[in-house]
Length: 239
Image (cartoon, rainbow, N blue to C red; front, side):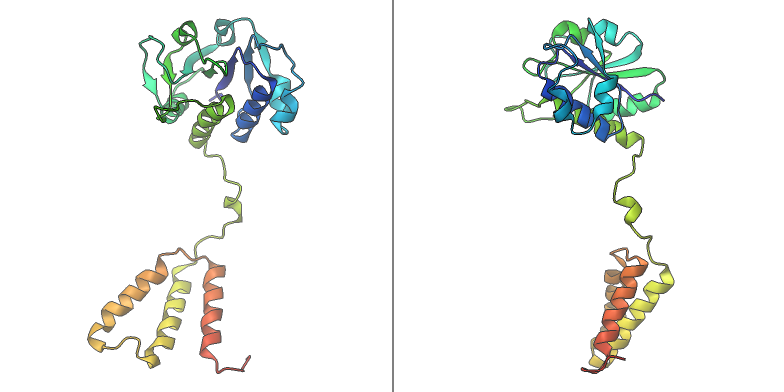
């Protein structure tokens, strides 16, 4: 499945094109198409705003019309907060991303100029309208915000790896959890924590439930066992 194309129709500021490129690359999209950018292309203001997403800017293609820009696309999604008098299916970015994931052929998200958005003729070219639930009293998104909403939802269908996931340790095995729970009980028993004894079973069950909720990993269990061992020792002893 080819990633969706991002099409910017009559973008006005180079800075916004750069910010849109940055939003794209954050979520793995690299193909940008520009339809008659107001200040021409390339635009020197786009590079600094892209914050390193130069790959997207270098590959950007310029077209004379929206029809030309999406000529090879089977599925075209027009992003707008207004229906513009055109009767078409209205999807959220998430629904559009799922449709792109399911259907063969190239797809395109189309974004309008910063000041006015897409015109009725632009929306008429699309298969569906993409919009987001938004404050009806303030429905203004800037170009990069609109791009990042669609790019993020598409990235979820591709299971992009979160930067911190690889640093997470796997959950501790049950045997280590059992050892920690038993350690807690051994310390609490002589201090009458489970008194009255008629409630001991329920109290132990509640303690077990509490200790198994966090999803401890091996290092966390070992650290907690160290804490318990420190509390178990007489003050001043280090063995």
